[in-house]
Image: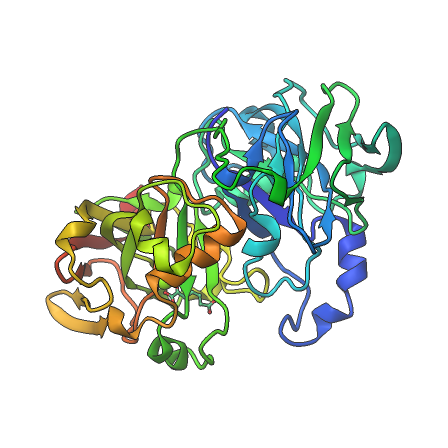
Length: 429
Ligand SMILES: O=C(O)C/C=C\CC(=O)C(=O)O
Ligand SMILES: [Mg+2]
């Protein structure tokens, strides 16, 4: 199996029941209208038998669930056709710290090393009425049935493929109940369901695992692109936000990557497709619990990206969500990676965007709220960064809407220049 592991929050009725009152108030204001997607990046994925690191001082919840595994390329698939695109299913454990909110990306709760054990693929055709059992140290601790999910596997594949092309080996974790089993160091957590090989993993105190442990990426060498929201104060204020007090990190899946000189599709019936010129940091060696002082040693180089946003789809759940930021082809990146030795001071680079030759955005990485060393230290404190992983460091003030026919050029001084043309859905067909 290879590919991106997607997951969905709030897909079990017990979760919607537990959070119903909160969803009628700020910042949510209404129950989620669409699936609340998130990504389990490659550092989280481990196999049966590999240890789940337990961060000291935290509460860690087991999240027994089922993963659907994509068998053939899926784009805008109807629910009734979805099963044709599913190669099979696997048991999975969506390990998590308890959700404090569903408002901003839950990177620290969901994306820690080893927080996504994934079992072997089973060529089942239906998991819509499957009992999923969790045992701790040989004793049943919980069970739930997939019939209580709000959206079935077929409905989830259809909904995600509406804006993100799914490739063979991609996976979708279909959800977990609100009440889950707390794990402790020394536990052996075993997930079982009829027709599947059991998925068992030991829970090991994070401190006892070697500091530079890296996880075998069993799915694919796809690198993870982390992106920062509101990392320039002037951009935060143009969106009427206060600057964040902690990095607002979200993840962009490889389906969104695009190359220099290519086209990006502006969805029909939207008001806002905003460009975002960004400096991207490329990680050069495995980083785990790295200090700010040492962080720049882990940088290989830099590249450029245009972190397009379809702001119409901003729901107040795990914001910015995948429908806003992880759509097919809406992250042109490149054209080259510039070695770090060629950039004297990455915190003093001018970023610019031209639309049809007119300069529309200009800013400087001197205004980053969270610096590159801070971001590497912050992320590597709770997850392993691997060579090739990337961090898009945010965009400064100067957003505007782009429409089909526009030529968009984003540039980072000394790093690169990325040309991209906007097309309509009709033109793209
Ligand atoms: O959730 C929001 O309102 C903003 C999210 C991302 C902004 C972004 O990509 C950036 O600041 O760059
Ligand atoms: Mg951005």
